[in-house]
Length: 280
Ligand SMILES: C[S@@+](CC[C@H](N)C(=O)[O-])C[C@H]1O[C@@H](n2cnc3c(N)ncnc32)[C@H](O)[C@@H]1O
Image (tube, rainbow, N blue to C red; front, side, top):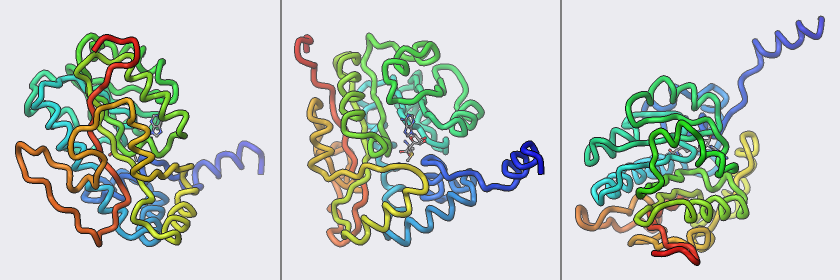
């Protein structure tokens, strides 16, 4: 077979590699899995077997982001940047925040070309942008012309880091959060979900890692380590918690977490603290 033939048969018949976005959609289920490849559905099943409860944790993380964004919208934030937005799935972030802020602008950012193709198809309209960038080049992201077309950095911005910081090294995550602190206006905020080792057995951690290596590196962190990443930010009550228990206090009483339930994920909302040398 010619090298062209070999290339062609591989590209036609090799299953596509699982990506972080596709596996997350497969974990979310409830219709989101329709956008996942077979390889990603298999990885999601293997993960759930290795780390029982991980599917539910992904769903709770997603619901928490909606509640947190809605809370910030009610507090007046009308600009959102969703870093690592994932395969779009309704209700879209802009639909959630526009319930309170009709003119809210949302810039979605992801480095996965498949996410961006879906985004360009589904996230169109006034005040919306889908940007294909790697957030490890955060300066480039923040200078992107399409992003600047919808986001005004003189006004507060809510940055969403949903299930993405665990794909970053400590150095990368710290640098990104510090750059955001430098550029964002007072009154800005961050919404974070992050996979954790807390509550998992050593066996689950090892088995989960072994499965996820098929997709990418992952940097699971403890609650303390996630708090440390957010050290330049003012954590909103109740802090870094099980996302299923995070509710705005003015609207619902916070739920007690089931201490027996597996955790797998933390969620937090934090206000920007001025960087040293910056006026508050
Ligand atoms: C697990 S999904 C989470 C999706 C969504 N934020 C949520 O919480 O439902 C993580 C997303 O981050 C994206 N991602 C990971 N590292 C990234 C990077 N360095 N730059 C941009 N996107 C990244 C992946 O492509 C994927 O779509």
